[in-house]
Length: 97
Image (cartoon, rainbow, N blue to C red; front, side):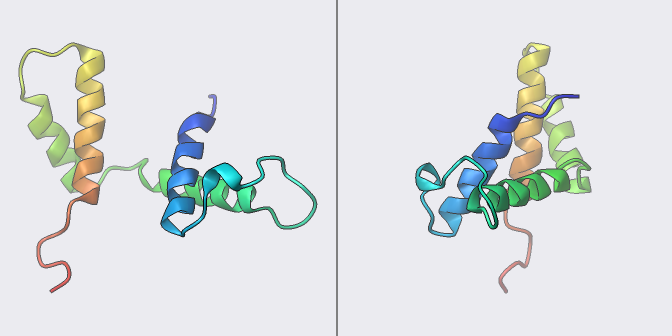
Protein backbone atom coordinates (compact mmCIF):
# COMPACT_ATOMS: atom_id res chain seq x y z
CA UNK A 1 0.00 0.00 0.00
CA UNK A 2 1.32 3.44 -0.92
CA UNK A 3 0.93 6.60 1.10
CA UNK A 4 -0.89 9.56 -0.42
CA UNK A 5 1.56 12.17 0.81
CA UNK A 6 -0.36 14.83 -1.12
CA UNK A 7 -3.46 14.37 1.03
CA UNK A 8 -1.38 14.16 4.21
CA UNK A 9 0.31 17.44 3.25
CA UNK A 10 -3.06 19.06 2.48
CA UNK A 11 -4.27 18.15 5.96
CA UNK A 12 -0.96 19.25 7.50
CA UNK A 13 -1.26 22.60 5.72
CA UNK A 14 -4.82 22.99 7.05
CA UNK A 15 -3.65 22.22 10.58
CA UNK A 16 -0.81 24.72 10.24
CA UNK A 17 -3.20 27.38 8.93
CA UNK A 18 -5.66 26.71 11.76
CA UNK A 19 -2.80 27.36 14.18
CA UNK A 20 -1.83 30.58 12.42
CA UNK A 21 1.24 29.22 10.60
CA UNK A 22 2.03 29.62 6.92
CA UNK A 23 2.60 26.11 5.52
CA UNK A 24 4.57 27.47 2.58
CA UNK A 25 7.17 28.81 5.04
CA UNK A 26 7.56 25.57 7.03
CA UNK A 27 10.89 23.97 6.08
CA UNK A 28 10.07 20.69 4.31
CA UNK A 29 13.42 18.97 4.82
CA UNK A 30 13.75 17.18 8.11
CA UNK A 31 16.64 18.49 10.12
CA UNK A 32 18.23 17.55 13.41
CA UNK A 33 16.02 17.86 16.46
CA UNK A 34 12.50 19.30 16.42
CA UNK A 35 10.86 19.75 13.03
CA UNK A 36 7.62 21.68 12.51
CA UNK A 37 7.16 19.79 9.24
CA UNK A 38 7.33 16.41 11.00
CA UNK A 39 5.01 17.66 13.76
CA UNK A 40 2.34 18.87 11.31
CA UNK A 41 2.67 15.71 9.18
CA UNK A 42 2.26 13.56 12.28
CA UNK A 43 -0.80 15.52 13.33
CA UNK A 44 -2.24 15.17 9.82
CA UNK A 45 -1.67 11.41 9.78
CA UNK A 46 -3.37 11.12 13.18
CA UNK A 47 -6.34 13.16 11.94
CA UNK A 48 -6.67 11.02 8.80
CA UNK A 49 -6.40 7.78 10.78
CA UNK A 50 -9.49 8.87 12.71
CA UNK A 51 -11.44 8.89 9.44
CA UNK A 52 -10.65 5.25 8.61
CA UNK A 53 -13.67 3.91 10.48
CA UNK A 54 -16.83 5.84 9.64
CA UNK A 55 -19.25 6.92 12.33
CA UNK A 56 -22.93 5.97 12.04
CA UNK A 57 -23.62 9.53 10.85
CA UNK A 58 -21.02 9.16 8.10
CA UNK A 59 -22.54 5.86 6.96
CA UNK A 60 -26.02 7.43 6.99
CA UNK A 61 -24.76 10.34 4.86
CA UNK A 62 -23.21 7.87 2.39
CA UNK A 63 -26.45 5.88 2.16
CA UNK A 64 -28.41 9.07 1.51
CA UNK A 65 -25.93 10.11 -1.20
CA UNK A 66 -25.99 6.61 -2.73
CA UNK A 67 -29.72 6.87 -3.44
CA UNK A 68 -29.21 9.74 -5.93
CA UNK A 69 -29.46 8.40 -9.50
CA UNK A 70 -27.34 8.99 -12.61
CA UNK A 71 -23.67 8.99 -11.62
CA UNK A 72 -20.64 6.97 -12.61
CA UNK A 73 -19.01 4.83 -9.91
CA UNK A 74 -15.94 7.08 -9.51
CA UNK A 75 -18.14 10.14 -9.06
CA UNK A 76 -20.38 8.19 -6.70
CA UNK A 77 -17.41 7.20 -4.54
CA UNK A 78 -16.19 10.79 -4.47
CA UNK A 79 -19.64 12.01 -3.52
CA UNK A 80 -19.99 9.32 -0.84
CA UNK A 81 -16.65 10.28 0.70
CA UNK A 82 -17.56 13.98 0.59
CA UNK A 83 -20.94 13.26 2.19
CA UNK A 84 -19.25 11.26 4.94
CA UNK A 85 -16.73 14.00 5.71
CA UNK A 86 -19.50 16.63 5.57
CA UNK A 87 -21.35 14.58 8.19
CA UNK A 88 -18.26 14.72 10.41
CA UNK A 89 -17.86 18.47 9.98
CA UNK A 90 -21.51 19.47 10.37
CA UNK A 91 -22.49 20.74 13.81
CA UNK A 92 -24.19 18.13 16.01
CA UNK A 93 -27.60 18.74 17.50
CA UNK A 94 -27.20 20.61 20.72
CA UNK A 95 -23.52 21.40 20.13
CA UNK A 96 -22.54 24.66 21.73
CA UNK A 97 -25.67 24.87 23.81
